[in-house]
Image 1 (cartoon, rainbow, N blue to C red):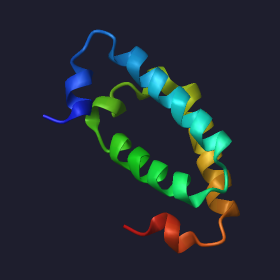
Image 2 (image 1 turned 45 degrees about the horizontal axis):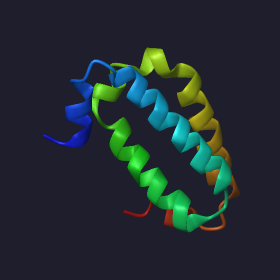
Image 3 (image 1 turned 180 degrees about the horizontal axis):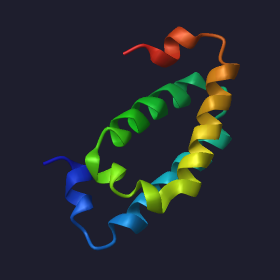
Length: 88
């Protein structure tokens, strides 16, 4: 069992997700343009969004997810190397 599956079984899962996404938003804002931070953060988000546990909570997280989407979109359109963003 991975960590996300474990916390999804906790009573405060929604609160944990909200706190996680709050931190992601801060990291995206404070590190805009810093590929050493942004690219690993994108990869982390990709793994988180692949989890069913997160998808089941998406209706409760709309505002946070919209903010993350806007920040990610801005970062991708402003990058000098799109290949780095999408490289495995």
